[in-house]
Amino acid sequence: MMMARSAVAKKKSRSALAVALPRELLVDIVGILAASSPQPMADLCNLRSTCKDMYGACKERHVGRRLAMEKERGMKWRDTVAYFAMLKNLADAGNPEACFTLGLTLVLARHNEQQGLACLEQAAAGGHKTAAYVLGMLLYTLKDRRDVAKRYIGQVEGDLMRKVATEKTNRECTKYRQLAVNAVREVAWKGMENGGQSGLVPEEEYRCTNARCGVPEDWADYDVFCGDDCRIRHECVQFFGQVSRYTTLTIQF
Ligand SMILES: [Zn+2]
Image 1 (cartoon, rainbow, N blue to C red):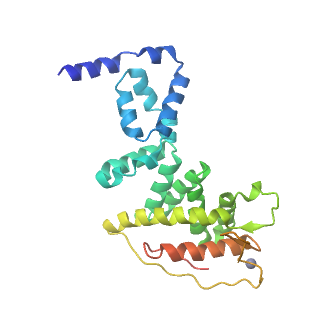
Image 2: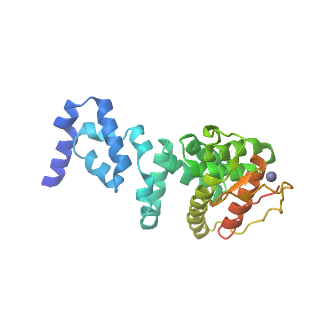
Image 3: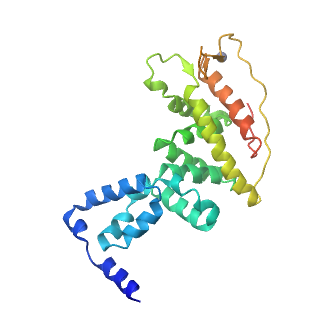
């Protein structure tokens, strides 16, 4: 009883720190904690109960956007309902990792492509490169979205930052492909538990006539391509081939 009364008192009171700091700075500090804590949800929960200013700061959109959601992955297995509630809240706040996971879940496990792609687009706009990679793969399967797909793969590779703009490598794609495959595996497992689908229609074989296209760079673990199309086709073959074990994605070139 004493504990409860004390908690209520704290919620109504104002801590010295909160009084001393301007609101914006307080929200910034809480945002840094949310981004760097190994257990952000528990820390925010504790902080929220200290005083009404902290309570308000913890609920700010900026804090939700920065929260290190990947640190809370374990919650998915412990409490699925709480996990998806958190995912939805953080995605609403514009958290890129939450937008990515929710988007992938909507596309793969809930068969809601429109909303799923919108979430993935929001994640990619927030700088989430795995989301940009997945968008590149998914949108390339839609004939009228291929230019957009190639731009997403260009975002993954940082093509615009390169000095030699004509060189098209898949150096970054190899890294983000692995992260994307892992994410699909996690979502598809969960989806299949809920009666989601499985299987994949493989794409037809494509071969460029340029003998130097798709050849590994000397001493490197990536390839060099003659253009955007060859690079994205290569990635599609690799990506859809690897996720075929976990999910159904229809792809037609
Ligand atoms: Zn080529």
